[in-house]
Image (tube, rainbow, N blue to C red):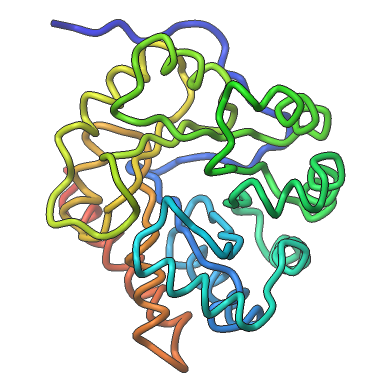
Length: 274
């Protein structure tokens, strides 16, 4: 059965740098402050040069309930160094001086509430960020956040899960700007051997309600998975694989991340029809 794609204008914020020119686009997640902020900046710039379209700047949190062991360990290391949300915002401002790539904050709600939603939006705009994804902020409780972010021309990205019923999925999709983050499976982040079958169906369902790009995340690690995402969605989110590359390559973290992203891109390029 053919599924009709949503029609109508795409909701975008003026000046947003979130664009997926290549297919699939690549959203790279980085745990900021692991191993330190200077290295994080180098990792982000290396990821962009290697072909990442959008960077998710992960704010370390003490209880990352949606994250698997790889990102949990990275958050613990970053917190041991005292990494804060403001540190991440300041680093983002430095990266913005050197790159026009899309950049969003990826955080749990607690650090944002401690800073204050209004100040958070102000600081994101000042740093040249394109928006944020607050992992544990439900759509039902996001009215003030969405309004404040919109006032500062910042995108609001939400997670859409395979278990969401259609009406809630519609609400989530229509509340997003920039792109919709489709969670490929239930559970926490982490690498998996193959792309979950739920991801294809979820992307199809999201497409009923929005014309925004859809990025599939949670478990994308191999070139084969990255390539497969391109057949069903606009972009893939690569997180745990990048964080693991940082963990396992002390002293050459940026180079290792660039090599990983380059390998993902090379596989898709080689497989593309000429």
